[in-house]
Each structure stands twice: as structure tokens, then as C-alpha cells.
Length: 152
Image 1 (tube, one colour):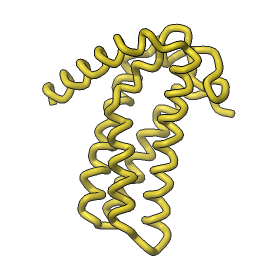
Image 2 (image 1 turned 90 degrees about the vertical axis):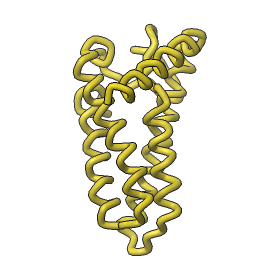
Image 3 (image 1 turned 135 degrees about the vertical axis):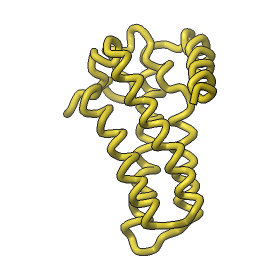
């Protein structure tokens, strides 16, 4: 657990130094793109679980994509100046995302844990287990949305 934390911290620090050169509007676009891509892939998994035609390979591809983005250090895209502004659309990040670091950190770690578990479960090809894990992954997304995303 400590090793994963240290690796995550190193990744965020490296990403943070690289992202310091990113314009705020680009950082917002990258965030929005990452979250949109994860949502699309969650939809792919959901379709496979609920559609009655489970395709293990498609689920693995989608789960792997979610896992990669979840572990990419997207937190580094919450740069100063990205609390307001427009990427592809106006940012919906609440101000608390910059101030409640402890809660955000816990939610982010939970999300990463569930995304990593989704990739493991997808590899089993067990549609019921994939469906159960999708519920856990979705709940971890919702936790962040509830506290840190402005609703339309």
C-alpha cells in the first residue's frame, strides 16, 4: 500500500511539473476529455453487462482504458487558475476541490482502487462480477461528483 502511494505521489509530482507549462484552458480541456473518455468506457461496460451479449474483450479494453486514466495523475490538471474558465465547456469543478484536499484525496484513492479492481475483474470474464464492480466504480465516481462537481 505504501509503495502504491509513493508511486502515485511521484507520478503526481512529475505530472505537476510538466503541467505547470499548460495553459489553464488547456488543462480544463484535458480534464474534461479524460472524464468524458472514462464515462464512454463505463457505458461500454454497462452495455456489455446489461445487453445480454457479454463480450469479454470489449470489457477488458474499456476497463483498461479507465484504469489508465485513473492512474494517469489527472489531479495535476487542477492548476491554479483552472477553478473558473472554459475548456470544451465551462468547468464544473467546485471551489472545494482546491481547499478540501483530505476529502478529495480519499475519494481519488477510492476511485483509483475501484478502477484497478475493475481491470482485474474484467479479465475474469465473469459478467456478474463485472456488473458488481461497475456498481462500485460508479459509486466512487458519484462520490466525487456529489462533493466536487457543480450540477447542471
